Amino acid sequence: MHQHILRQAQDDSGVEIAPAPKLGRAIVVTSGKGGVGKTTTTANLGTALAQRGARVALIDADVGLRNLDIVLGLESRVKYHLLDVLEDKVTLDEALVRDKHSETLVLLAAAQSREKDEVDTEKMRALVQGLRERYDYVLIDCPAGIELGFKNAIVGADEAIVVCTPEVSAVRDVDRVVGLLGNRFKPQLIINRLRPQLVKKGKMLSVEDVNAILRLPLLGVIADEPEIIITTNRGEPLALRHDGETASAYHAIAARVAGEDVPAPSPEFKESLMDKLGSIFGGKRA
Amino acid sequence: MIEWVKKVFGGPTSSSTAKERLRLVLMTDHLALAPDIIENMKRDLIDVISRYVEVDRDKVEVNFEREDRALAMLANIPIVSVNRPSPPPQPPTQSGPPPRRRRRKKPSVQNPATAH
Image (spheres, rainbow over the protein chains, first blue to last red):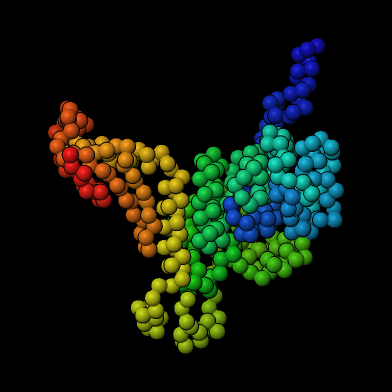
């Protein structure tokens, strides 16, 4: 009798007993610095993985500043959030929001009117573990900063993707975050918002400059393109499309995450007529 | 050709300035995050100098300063006596195979000897 109760308790926690034959991968998307595109990257990578047929769960761990639902266009469907699940107010299935566009994609939204330190770290770990038994990928959108919100976002993850823009401050913060993550998470790098024209003119750090310092495996480079802003405005991630350089870059990154041996996408500098004129007449260096 | 002329006369690009700033700021960050390394280095430094002169261990200061384009280590090591301290500390290479390095470069000693 006593033994039976004990086993029941362990079953409920879902951690210790009978793990599924193959667990999904839990990947935290982080950066340290805010505003480098973690949420946009999470939404697009999640969409691209789901478009490949993978079962994907996205967790918005940015408690207090819920945004992933907006980028995915799911804000009107969110009824319950992460803390409702962690505090056992609703079941996980009640809180998971099905994506509009990709059948195999679900979102667990962040709580908007709560604070990051209200998240129970151990419960968060168990939640991610539970999701790994049901999904091929669990992507966790980490809040900016390196405080408790960061710790709660990484606790259940076993891999990390770091997003960095080609700026001194962003590289410095990624360097710090990678130091905090340590070796366990095998961090991989996405360089976001690169402007090849500026790199060519010597006005922006290049991919090589950034990675000479960070020395991380490069998943891919995303250009700073207006279509990302436009698709985010509409709540339709760019990775829903299969044409165009930037959409293709997200799909290539997803393929690399899935273990396919495709080259890391990198935007190319396409010299326009204006660029040529500019270089003939000598633009001022800055 | 025009690009080349600009490269020669135009001075550094802003991306090379960014690269340089990043290199320096990360060196400073990494040092600040590794206090144990600095402590070990300080101890080793004192050990080496103590083989030649007697230093005031408690008053040794090691600082790092950012200068315009470089990071400098400044060591302030008060020397108590220029006589070999007694008992003379055993250099670590003495009992092993032939000494590898007889001379070691001394760091800049800012405070001159306060001889007794």
